[in-house]
Image 1: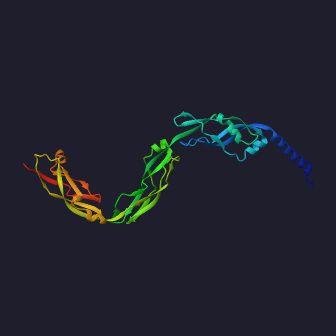
Image 2: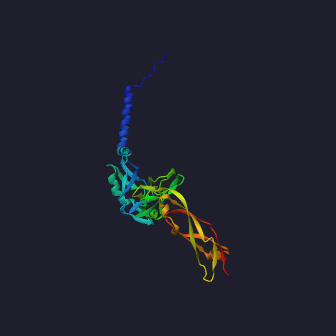
Image 3: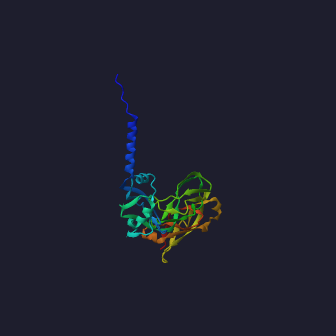
Length: 312
């Protein structure tokens, strides 16, 4: 049988020692290389706000020993870039000259790592003027009421508007803010719901003074009523006399039970415009309600035509 040859332990030890010495010699030498560092911006003026995400990294050509470079590559801290001394490029675009940041950047690097050059000569910032504006809130409700029930007044939002802060061009484009949706079925009592204010799409720079508001509604049982109401003919020439039929019209109205007794003949004002009949060559007048009580939810006129004859 052939005997297996063994590698002497002294050879292995010599090899490991040689590698270690070579590694130490290599790391002790100085090198020039490019390092990529994350950056953060500070000292931005209080009346300015970033409108888009700026550059997040910077490339530095540095000189350091292998030991320092090896250590630097682990756990890099973001370099702070001061944005208090800006120059305008155009409109809302400003720039920072990186050469003016060299001293500050050098102080933030580990000892023994020297900056030779910053590859980016400038950093661009899209800054808008910070402004505030009161914006109206818009409800988003899908409510089905129980038979015979309905809102007695308009839905209320508390508060009905909020102060929004952000870049001027974004604030100026806002006319209203939508609320998260409310969906309810078979509603027959008052309700009050807390909802969130929705941020417009692509508007991450907006700040709301409030993030939630209340939406409330007063719900009542409604009933139908009828009234005989006289009408007035308008724009009738003084030399024209009409005979009309019927002499009164009937108003069919819907009102809440609590306000039913507040509705009477004086709650409605009905007019027939003679000019409409004349201009359209009609032999009848069209009655219209020109004034109705605020308590009335809806109404219709019966009949919707008033026949007339011109007296000769």
